[in-house]
Length: 125
Image (cartoon, rainbow, N blue to C red; front, side, top):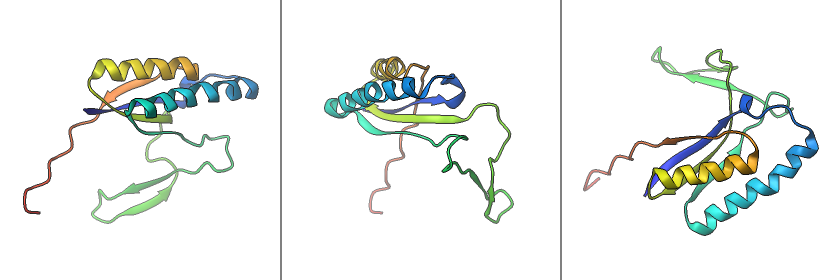
């Protein structure tokens, strides 16, 4: 099995009414429930957006040799991650299928990327 990241940028969501968003939540949760039932679910979640009172962003940078934590995003960007799902599936075809189901349920595009394989532990450590 291989882990895949299914994600969307907040800018892909578009402008919709609160009622519209509420109507999408049960649809996307049904897809997550199906992922759990299929045994492929690893994690899913949305991120707080700029309009939320809970929205905070900080950056951790150790490139100077010392860790510096600062408020605000590390880089200026026009796109911000809005949410993500991680699935552990047999192949890319399966990951694409789940991304398609999530895109349909949410009502906005999803992207799929494969995680690099995890290094195997060294024997005896």
